Amino acid sequence: MREVNLEINEGEFVVLAGRSGCGKSTLLRCFNGLIPHFYDGEMIGKVEVCGLDTRQHPPYILSQYAGMVFQNPDNQLFALTVEADVAFALENLSFPRDEIKERVDQALKIMGIEELRDKSTLELSGGQKQKVAIASILAMHPKILLLDEPTSSLDPFSAKQLIDTIISLNQKHRITILIAEHRLEMLLPYASRIIIIDNGRIVLDGNPREILEKYDVIPYGVSVPRIVKVVMHLKKTLNNSLIPWTPLSVEEFVDIIRRWEEK
Image 1 (tube, rainbow, N blue to C red):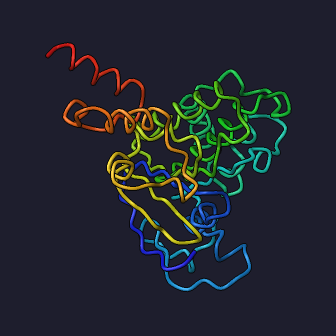
Image 2: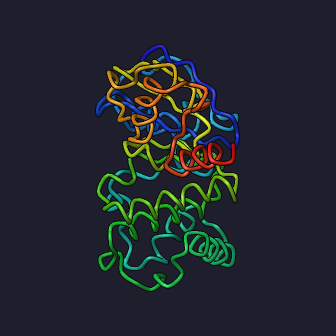
């Protein structure tokens, strides 16, 4: 990453977009201290998470503020049962047993996977594994959830279920979300912000609707939602006043059509 100057506010839902290798994962790893503590290289500048300088605090401390969910859940699931996996970090930090049980119960309930408690992670589907990985992070009560392409290995149905859960974490539990993802169609209607990265630099940063209306993002490897492409084509052939704003989902487009009918 180069020349990055970025501030994320509490409660935001931020989507990181850009072609593979542009720097999305690198940026996420800066927020939880994996950079500079676990990766070689030179870090110039400062990253603060909830007032903590990531250079001066190890990842096990920062993980209580910013929890990371990796692209492949198998990289962070290793205990014999789901319950043991969710409790692992808390046990390593010597939390009281009663508090561990309470936090594990709460995390499993929030993720809707209470019935998986006693199962081995080897028995789980890809979507279930990602939910367990997120539950293990939620048990730490972080303020920020960092997700690195969590749906990349999931089928469309499982991806939709997982993204709906992530949206709920932001809306109902006010957890700040930073997610690197290529499946933008399911995310953008709920995102407060999209940050587009190219060659290690932030090239665009703002409200998703405004970014897609004003800029051509395709050169940066960003897949524009199909409904946005349809609307942009319609705007070229119809009076722009008929489509006053760019819908980010099919549901929003249907709402525009209904308003036409009411007129």
